[in-house]
Length: 550
Image (cartoon, rainbow, N blue to C red; front, side, top):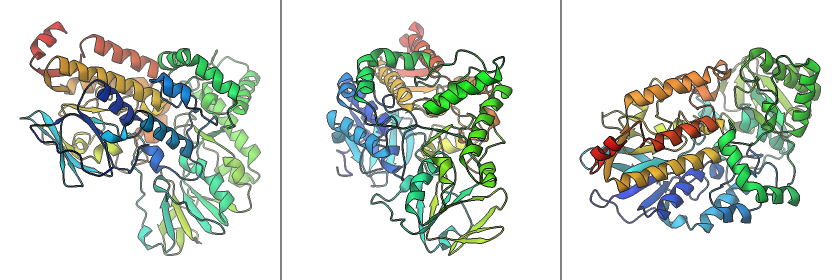
């Protein structure tokens, strides 16, 4: 696909421009195209897949079970695609994205290899003008961002990074042809979910691997395994009921074994027995052992100590084991990691841990990494430092609203978006899985489908009523942001300095960004739509009549 579309102009704008061709942008394109809209997708990468195109580091997998991390909107796709493992690898997920793109013939309406450099809302024409790095402008009445919550890498600012003479890699941009680490001295900086997946795989390849850890993470075993034909057949036969259950009754949009009782008041031996059973079963199902684990500090501490005891029993060296035990934040309040042999990897003779809380990192040198006690020499340095989550990819679009402020300037004190979908001063702009929606606290495919379907219905409503301009108000987004914060503070989530709070990015406002509860959120969106899209102001041919009817 070339970089050039048929030209758009102020007089011939697209109905909708979509930014991003991951799972959100693909479904949004399909839905709007089927409804007869003039719609195109702009994608930075050379093909579909979004974060699953870029994140191809060793060990990359989804932490939601594959039979649930998939589209539900098309029964043919659901039945004809067969997953091979409980937790799918990045290559398999990317194959799935390509399968869907081929099946629905999506690529003919996607412009690959183009970056949006800026955008402004033309208040006279009531349309967006998006500038691209190819030198062309895209005019569109509506813009929908599908840029992903975990797609802008957090590249750390460490003194001397440019001086390193060996190979430097960030996990979010792993070389497509792979990296030969055989026999090499390798450093990996970071121990978040990416590193926890990558470290066991890299350790099997490297001559020696040194892990630089500032903050240890809780992780539970995946117990990954090939899917049996019987399991796959059962899911396919029961998908309608299972999907409904996930969407309407699950806080995370993922089906887990829900708790039947709180930990507080349960015999401690029974608490440990239940935690043990879930540890053996594997996956994030562990987090749902008891109903009070994310609400009560005492209950949470029981689960945390259970995992710390597991770490101590797995890792042979007591000092290393203790360094790997998180102790200064509640379990489950950073994204719970799901791993395959992560802690056991530290028993390998070619793996060592540097505890940066004891010997902080000072700088990168030409030969390696300088900490307060020594210089460590390496052939390769890998940065597994995560993402500027939820808002990072939105802010880098450099969009300017009606008051002359960029989105970055408007959100200087923290993001505020009504339902996580729209923000005032930016009319005709909508965000799939934006801040203030369940997004990263959910099976994101469930959240994507719900947002796409809400927005598709809204686009048809706009068209049928002759509406030319739609936006939320400062009051509505403020009220929603207050509600998001209020819900978060009924839990222990804000007690962790997590990327949910923006705490991993220097200078980023500390605001709890996602909404907790797919089930509750879905009901709220349904109410908004049923009430004529309350919270949105609309101007156009039938706007007065529409407002009166609403």
